[in-house]
Amino acid sequence: MDLVLLGAPGAGKGTQGALLARKLHVPKIATGDMLRDAVRQGTELGRRAKQVMDAGQLVSDEIVLGLVRERLASDAAEGAVFDGYPRNVAQAESLDGLLGEMGRRINAVVYLEVDDDAIVRRMTGRRTDPETGVVYHVEHNPPPAEVADRVVQREDDREATVRHRLEVYRENTAPLVEHYRRAGVPVHTVDGGGSIDAVQGEILGLLGR
Ligand code: AP5
Image 1 (tube, rainbow, N blue to C red):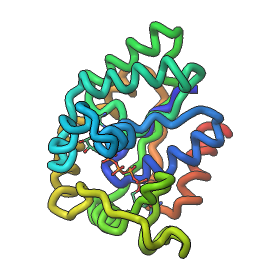
Image 2 (image 1 turned 90 degrees about the horizontal axis):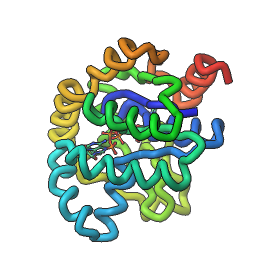
Image 3 (image 1 turned 90 degrees about the vertical axis):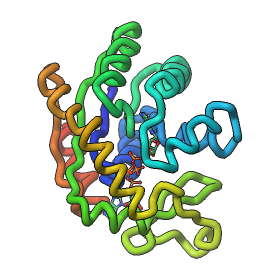
C-alpha cells in the first residue's frame, strides 16, 4: 500500500506515520528525516539543505526527488507511508511518475487537521532522541528517564519559524488535498487534535484495518 500523510507542520504526520508503517508493514519515507540525516552527516546535500530548513522554507524539488527515488528502489519496493512528501503539486506529479514506472499509485491520503495554536504548542514542546530518532513531547508524550538527558529540540521549532512554516504549508502543500481529490484518490480527513491513540484508531478505522 502507498499512503500519503498530509497535514501542517506538527499535525502529527511523523508520529502517526511511524505507527502506521509498523501496522502496514511498509517503511515510512519522511523527507524531513532524510534531510536532517544528511545535515548531521555533513554531506554536500546536507550543507545545501540546512540553511533552507532552518529558515522554514522548502528544499528544492530536485534534491527531494533524488532522495525519494533512492528509497523507492531499495527498502520501499512494496509500498510506503509518505510523511512530509509530496509538499507541492510538482512533487505530487513526480511521485505519481515514479510510482507509475513501478506499476503503483497512491492508494489513499490521510489528511490530519489541527488548529494553529495547538500546532505551535506541539512544536515548541517537541523533543527528539538523536540516537533513535524517536519523537517525544514534553507534556503529551514525555521522554523516558533514560533518554531525557539526551533529547534535543529542532532548530526550526522556534515559534517564529513555526509560524512561517505554517504559511509555507498553506501556500504550497494544502492545495494537495484538492489535487488528490480531483485525481480520484480517497482522501480521509481526520481530526488530528485528539490523543495519539485516538487519532491512530480513527485512521485505522478509515483505512479498514
Ligand atoms: P518535516 O520534518 O517534514 O517537518 P513538517 O512537515 O514541518 O512536520 P513536522 O515533522 O514538524 O511535524 P509532524 O506533522 O511530523 O508532527 P510530529 O508527529 O513530529 O520538514 C522539515 C523541513 O524539511 C521543511 O520545513 C523543509 O525545509 C524540509 N523538507 C522536508 N520535506 C520536504 C519536501 N518534500 N520538499 C521540500 N522541503 C522539504 O508531532 C509534533 C509534536 O506533537 C511531537 O512532539 C509529538 O510528540 C506531538 N504530537 C503528535 N501527535 C500528537 C497528538 N495527537 N496529541 C498531542 N501531541 C502530539
